[in-house]
Length: 242
Image (spheres, rainbow, N blue to C red):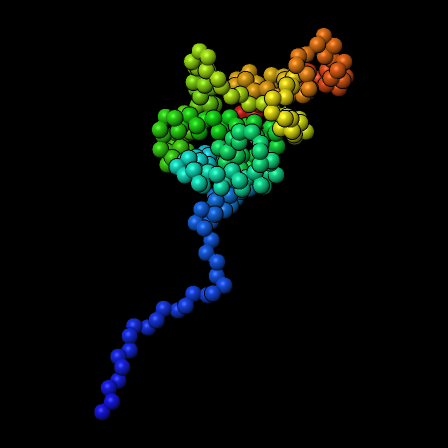
């Protein structure tokens, strides 16, 4: 009498040979970008309940910012993805990625909209400094108001130690940015700027020149179109909660 071989447990189905495993970080970044882009489209299309939706949108942005702050790898991948999307030079200067998160979440693409996103980004930074839990972001924004939080953040920024170096934002045309970044290390330039915000000290670059200092004939060297508009920078800043 022949003995039958005992059959073992059913073998698991073989994995498809052509399947490529996508790195976890890449999938996460893609999901972040998709979530932010969807959030921005939703906010732009909203007609009712805009205030509540904005607060929820900023809470989403805060959640993603905190996750990126906790992972340097994810943060770098996010920066690379956004730079590639915006076609920013690899050797560009400091990249304000938290602003990019808020800008994407709120659908801010124009210069004016990105100014507003910058102020909202400051309010979110102030909440992080106060250790406000991410899940309480929307509720805190509703209770205290974006304008108030942003104002308090600005006051805190101005409380600097003597001799401390700080960064301030400059708004400029892509051509001026390219001219600055295209200079060799050690090159001396004169940058003419105009104040565009009383609340947080933002400046707009009016002209970039390869010179050590501005002379008396600066208006002639800049051209009539620039000289005539040196004081024409009274852009209205939208209310943070619009």
